[in-house]
Each structure stands twice: as structure tokens, then as C-alpha cells.
Length: 278
Image 1: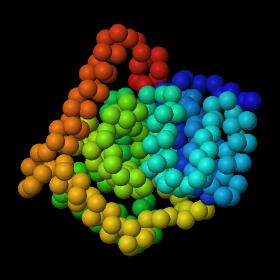
Image 2: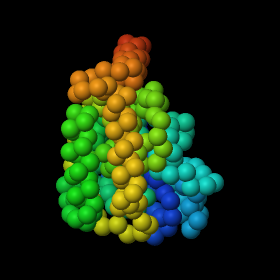
Image 3: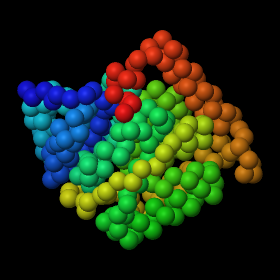
Image 4: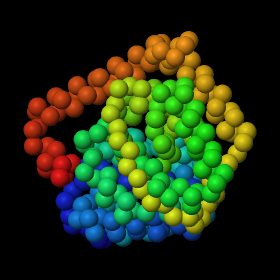
């Protein structure tokens, strides 16, 4: 079994895989290649979400070959966000980054993310070449941006891409929805909690395998209605912040920051040893 050598990075790449046998191996190997080139070593956790093709076998092969690769097999397809929620109990590092197993993200872009890990609560990535996603998906993403800005005041360019999040904070958020909507709800609650974030560009390539579920009109309309209900609970009547759930998210974030402060006082050299600072 191969052991990569480099500066430890307190981060896990969570690779989401559902019937991605055409691209999964290259996705994982790109993560490992980035570590070799950058001189940093991170964990890789593959979430095999009930795949019916060879995705699970491919992940297992790489896990036996590399010491820092692990696999979690979910027996039945649970959906993207439910797979993410499951990973929260498995990630052993402070931060995790979501990497879809379709090999669309160019890992060299992650060089831009590293200096900001630990300095911001959340790092959102947005594609600087969005045209590779296709015009229809681009228009759909743009409409969601307008909706989130108008209703929630959330001005994040791209919520469904490469993102770095702290495990403790996401576990503190009360998330009611599953599926792709659950991911949007998580990001909105975090953004409204008072967390600070930065947006970093990354490069995408054309999809090599699997299929995107983003272009389902009925699902998008249903998600829109559910997000509107979430707005009522978070924001209350009118456009001003209010409501019990809004305050709950703020309190969860305040508790998270207080815990970080306690850890910083108790272990002043922790961040330097973990490689979270340049």
C-alpha cells in the first residue's frame, strides 16, 4: 500500500460517486496527483452512493492501493445530500471538500483554495469557464442566483460546486430537506448564520460519465416552492431577518466560533502544525 509523503492538510476530499465508473478512477487519481505536486497530504473518502456499475469496485481497488483513501458503500442510492450528510460522521479532519466523481473539476485549481483554509469559515468555488456545463444549465444556475439573492440576500455565485466546509459547523445546522435541495438549504443557513466566506474560481472540464439531474423542470419547481417555505421560516414576513430558525442558525455559528476560540487558546500551535497557514 502506497503512503504519500508531504505536509499534512487538515482536510478530507469527499468524492461523491453514483454510477461514475467512466470517470471515478481519474477523479480520485487527480486528487492524489494534486497532493504529490503540491507537497501536501489530505485524506480521500469515496462515498459510493448505491452505484450499480463498477464504481464501488474501482473505489475499493484504489483504497487497497493508497493508505489515505477510504470508501463508504451506501447500499441503496440515498441521493447526493444524504451521502454528504453521512460523510459528516466519517470525516476525521476539521474540513472537507466536496468533489463530484464525474471528473469535471480540474484539481490544479485547488492550489488557490489552500491559503484560505482556516482563514474563512467556508470557501465557495465557482467555475471560471461555465460554458462547459452547457447553456441551459448555465441559465438555470443564473436564475437560482437571482432567487437566492432576492429572497435570502445570499450572493454566492455557485452553490453546487467545489466547496470547503468545517465539519463541526455543518453538523450544527438544522437541515430538514434531502436531495440537492438539502445542499442549498445547508449553504443558505450557513451564509445567514454570520459565517464568513470567500469565493474562488476553479476550472471545469466537460462531463465524462454519469448523468446530471439538474435539468429536471418539475424537480426545480418543487425545490423552488420548498425554498420559499424555508424563506418564510428563516426570514419571517417581509425582508428583514427574523424568526426562530434564523436565530437558531446564528446561535449555532456563535457556539462554533466560541469552540474554535477555546481550541486556539488551548493549542496555539495547532494551526501551524496542521498546515492550515502558509
